[in-house]
Image (cartoon, rainbow over all chains, first blue to last red; front, top):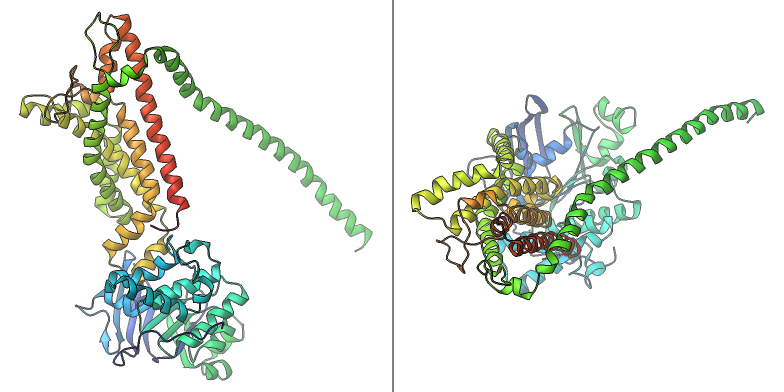
Length: 265
Length: 298
């Protein structure tokens, strides 16, 4: 890491980013893709979701910020609680929820705007800050995403001119500018080269001091390197969730062991 | 590797190479054919442009743009009123066609698959194929007859209604090209759906939409039939929206069917001006698109 990331705004201590999942199920149309999920996600730690393609880990990740409900025919049952509050209850504002639960996608997707505008997007509509406040928020978010030093002289340039790894960190900065409690990462480094991947991983390691991170990854070494807890999904079910070290060294379930030793998946 | 294996390799490569030569040959032929087709496609435009220049350039002068039509027998005269009239009609048409067309297109793209969207898309296509004379009669029935007189507003509304399906479908196409990942990015930042559609999706697609709008404007600029019963035409200077107004296509029509040679010449000049107007609009559309793609931010 080139510069020590500056702490962002002081997080509200009542908001921890703890996620409790009870009997959560999900359907795309008639086909059920998640079955009776029960788990807790530890606040201020990194939780990795692993499992073969199509096992439902991304679907579940996208249920945590309710991004899935835009898909026609999507249906769910059960409960996901964020700091005790059911995110699917009546009166839960999905816009507020998505500000509290930031998300970064596999394929970086900056807006076709300047670097500055990309980061300022969230705060601009959510908080209507003054020009100076916005400058502070943008700088802080870019520092937290370890991107500030690389872009501080070209904030007005198009975000699309950055390298892939930089664009992905810009997307992280964009999410951080909303000051979320939870950050969802959907295979954030799977399309990046090793050095860009390493930067993302270092960043995740830094960020977990401030927020709860959930990362979906196909890279088992990555899960082992950066996560505190690991959940193994298979065919829409949670097979096993453990401290990462224990899951990788002495899994309880045979299917987990088969997967992490590469016998299937 | 043994000699036998190498020999087998070569034996396998040879037929492939001859197949490659054949495919190259086919490719050259096809490229040539499509190239010829592309050339033929622009021939009508070039012929029309050339002929218009030959016939109409003679009558073009500053006078043509600044002075009013003169009575038969008098020398000179221009189409100033018709040029202004056409621009005004296009302005009215845009006010009618753009909000409805862009809004409908956004709906079709963002709510695709719903029954209403499918119905509207189908009807827009039907409307697109509607003969313009029918649109004229329709506008006459509802916008001219009740008021008892022809008017610029009725004419603008008639060609504005013709713009609607064009703008709707281009907007839909352009909005559909906006990657889903951009929508998700905005939604994941806590953008409400409507803001995502307006600020992210529509803005990203704006370059293409502007091009489509200008193409639609250029397309209706030359419409004559809907104006016959609505704007009606006017030999005098009028910018009153409630009164009949002159328009280039109408003036061309009137002059072209007249028995006077100097009016024929003016009709050619009018046609040249009209096509130049359309060309300019199309060029602006291209420039706008390029400028949009070049700039990184708003």
